[in-house]
Length: 140
Image 1 (cartoon, rainbow, N blue to C red):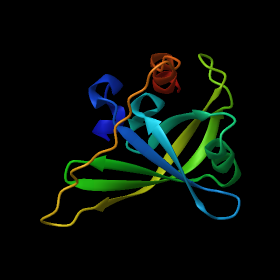
Image 2 (cartoon, helix red, strand yellow):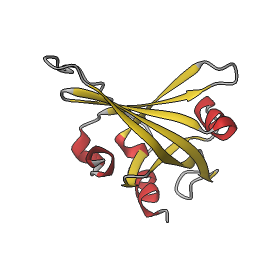
Image 3 (cartoon, helix red, strand yellow):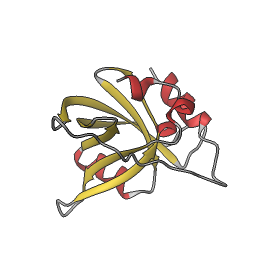
Image 4 (cartoon, helix red, strand yellow):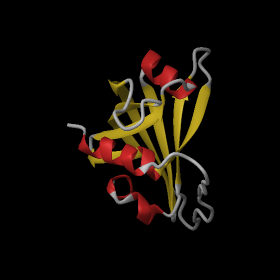
């Protein structure tokens, strides 16, 4: 919860994986930055996805999603049910907004082991993401 509701600048480019299910039943992975995700509370997570992406299509079709978070010492799987909030964001019409209702959280931790590698994103020459995160945060 704290990672998904904190200031994206403090995340230092940490990537968050979003798994959906495609039309053939296969897992489909998308990589989000901390700028594209926000948890207003323990039961809801808002995400911005590209409107024309397979991820958006999958979320609209069946609503099943799992967020994968790597943290020091453990991995967390947040199982969710998606609901479309906006097909186009005000700040960036190329992005859609979904609310992911949290259905369960699993912690993958093996005593005596530690997650030593976390995926980080470094981006250059892309659209500014602060307005996207702001819109995720303000949605009521």
